Image 1 (cartoon, rainbow, N blue to C red):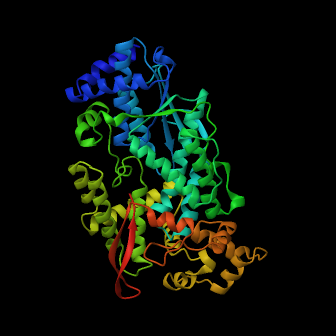
Image 2: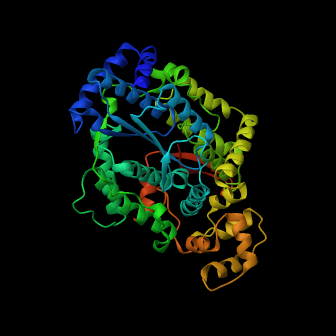
Image 3: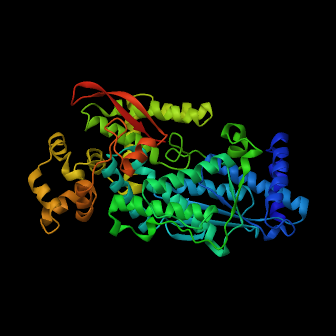
Length: 489
């Protein structure tokens, strides 16, 4: 337990007396909650670690508690830390995680197991392991297929599939090597109850099969597995849902939940020195994007808003960017980001020159992370092939594309139709295969909450997403000011 004693001495310098007292109270609650109160090392505890500022503090706090338990009992619980990777995370996130692990003396400590999940693959953490191409390709396709269904709505395009993947990573980590006894979370019991209710609501919304005799965390996972199967069935077609879209729910044991933040504060500002000076957490220029500190996708959400204004709405890129920035800075304030980080983000988009720099950076990230170019992002904004090509004529006209609408309709409406040249051209401008384009063609566009309310599950998911706002924008095509929904992170 040498690592623990060294870590405790070093962390004591950085923690306030109030935080240390809160950790001691948490130890008392935690030991009482363990299935085995006598042999503490028999208890396995799972902690998810996204690599951002808040989850880095959470890892430090739980690690300190692990040390306190050892000091009190001469024994401590086994801590399993799991990170779920996706294409929107670059190597800077892995570097932050690596620095945190070094600072907390986790490497070489037999009481800790560090894992990472890449799609269905779970393995020991190694910051130098590249993201598998299969995961990057799946993330790319999920973005495109969702984007062409939701008309590039920010949250729906980037977050729906990603959130379900994150849930699956919990299942994989809870299943790994015999399972775990407890999951440490930052959510209160009330919030946990709300998540379970949300899962059941989604299950009813998608008319998923009832999960009989399954309670607790495995029941939660099983419920969301049914939701995932139905959700991706709506996006790809029921026959095209892959194992990678499902959620692991058969667990060796059903873990309990333990709320860590009953005893400590969550805000990064209150723990800035610990994050910055002790754990050497760094806010990367791409991974620190608006209200996220471990994902570059919000940068793409802003970029798409700019492209949308420039193309679909016939205005200019900077106007669309400023709409997103106003909205996203508000989200940062709601999430209690320190004022200097909000100011830092605002400065990135402070004038036309700064916006141009960010535009280049976002375009490069879209290509590096997802293999998507600007033409393919613009195509997704119009969603021209979905719902029988409803927006096709507008797309071809406004983008001055030399394609025949009638030939495209003929190709996409008939699965027996062959036109290799046109198929290749459509794949180049959209990023989608002919099979995927035909799937879009057969599906309806998802309507926003400003349009006539539809009762299909995808429209209702969009309608009830909390991270959105209604704003007034200039529509250069209609030459009028209109109300629009904006969403993001």
